[in-house]
Structure formats: C-alpha cells, structure tokens
Length: 211
Image 1 (tube, one colour):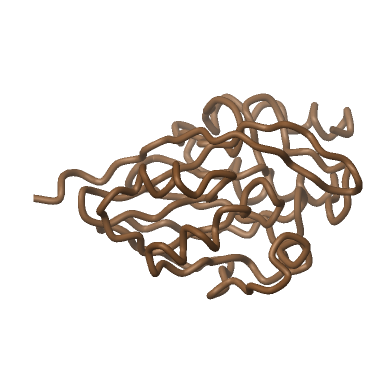
Image 2: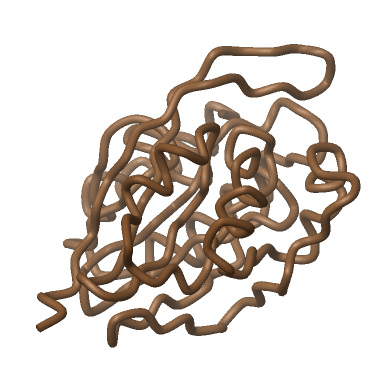
C-alpha cells in the first residue's frame, strides 16, 4: 500500500542574492505525494537534505515556484540524483540563467497545467509580481495552495528588486489566489502557513500601503 497522499515539510537554510546584496534565509521545501511517488516544490539550498527527505520514493518532478537562487540552487543536483525533471515557468528563465547559466530547466510550467502525483492534481497558477514567472500550485483534493513567494501570512511577497512589480503581484493575489476557497491552507516559501480566509480581507489595505 502506498499510503494516503500527504504534504511533508522541510526547512533548509542558505542565502538569497540579487541586485548586489546577499541575505541569510530559511526556505520551506514542500514534498507532496505518498509512500511511492512524490514531487518536490522548491529544492532550496541543500540537495542532500532534500534527497534524504525523498528517500527511496520516485521523484516525478522538481517544481520551481520561481527562479530566485534560494529556491532553485539545489534543483539540478536533486534532478541529477533522481532522474526527475526540473520544471519552471519560461518567464523566469532570465533569473534561472543567473543561477545556472549552463543548465536549462527540463520543461515548462504554464498557467492551467495540472501535475498529477499519487493521484493528486496540482494546478499551476501563473502569479507574476514577485518574479515574472512566479507560479503557485493549487491542490484542491488536499485543500492546499503552495504559494512560493507570492503570498505570505500577512502580505504579498517582496517586489523591491529586479524583475518584480508591486501592482502585478497585487493583481495576481486578488484575481488568482483570493478567489480560492477560504479554508484553503497556504503553504508559503518562507515562514508559517496561513489560509485564504485569513488573508483575503487585507488586499485593499496592502494595495493602499504599497507593500
């Protein structure tokens, strides 16, 4: 028996660098699947830790919510060790190339795509703003959204650096995420989880503040 599909959580630590600055960060790595098959959402920092969490299960894909270096640094090594494909929205190629100039992703993510793992569908939602090719993954059967750095507990992802735009992320959150069922649990790229219901009332406040 493969067991029930489930969400597993790993935290890895390293740095994020862009526009000449470097910051220490802790990243959430999400593993979705069962005892036989999983996908990894954001292979961050530490390939050995990700591979240990996957174990002897088949890794069907390494899904990148966006291509900032802290989220994709370990993706090629995890893919090489497992034979999994690295998937990224094409609009984030410009960021990917700054991290892995000699290694392309193996396949694209497009809005509306569905990735199926352990019988669970993960629907790709293109949510630009934090990065041009940022995506979120919605798993209705699990009542879960994997938001990368688009939506956090308490506000939108940062938009103060290259290739980001505040108005765009507010539109993405309002039109693509806050329309999901309120009880949907939001599994973020950094920090704690939240729900759509908890964040939805604050969209106008965020827009007015400009952050």
